[in-house]
Length: 354
Ligand code: COI
Image (cartoon, rainbow, N blue to C red; front, side):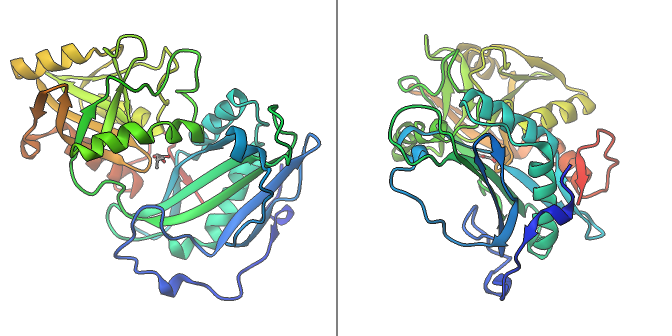
């Protein structure tokens, strides 16, 4: 177990916090005063350092740049009503990070480095946690290959880092989503379940094409038939059909096992919805829309939290929703916010006190 004293801390000479407008924080634009950095070499993790936020000096032959051994996580910290800082479900993200690391043939990061390093970093920069509704401190742990050789092989050296970014909502308005049926995000046996940088890089062309058509994101469909929905660019997807909450299951390993997805499932159960995790065909969604049974559609993600989808387009068929009459999404959002802010008991141990 690493103790707080095992982490080498170098504090910034001058905080930048006064330069930031905490009422206007676009996602991922500003970073706190400090960052965490630790290198892996020769089968061992080195000294964990917390130091002033700064640029890195890297070789142009860096393995991560050439072959994509680069992975990350997204986690959020909040203050409760008494101003105590908490991290939301960090252990779940820590576990998923290492599942991704193994799939990408990278070393796992020990729990004490990930958790104690993150705790200590947030403790140091705790004044950067925004207090405004829907704002939070976004935590970005990431790891990349640092061998300086351009042969294709798993790197021998890696860098693990954590950045903190005070941030507002990722999507500020209800979303318009385009169902993608040409490009593919993931196939069974691939890396769809992993939080690998390449999954996001490969999504950008389809997303840009959807944006040109006036949509915010794509809803991916399966690689074989483009018939079963998978996930939306940065979110898992849910459909409220009658009194059921239906969401694609994780069996095929083609979608991310979202921590917010899991939280939404738990909260929906508490609100009395029946949950169905199973393959979801786009035809079923269209039929449910036509019969009036499709009540609400939403996405879940750490960055996106719970985002309403006001329009869904498949080929030329456009499904529009009157979000003002919705019940499930506002209730899920409220219950999650109440748990995060301490108004509702955290019976599941989701809040990790710093
Ligand atoms: C997150 O929700 O934390 C993500 O990582 C999605 C996106 C910002 C890449």
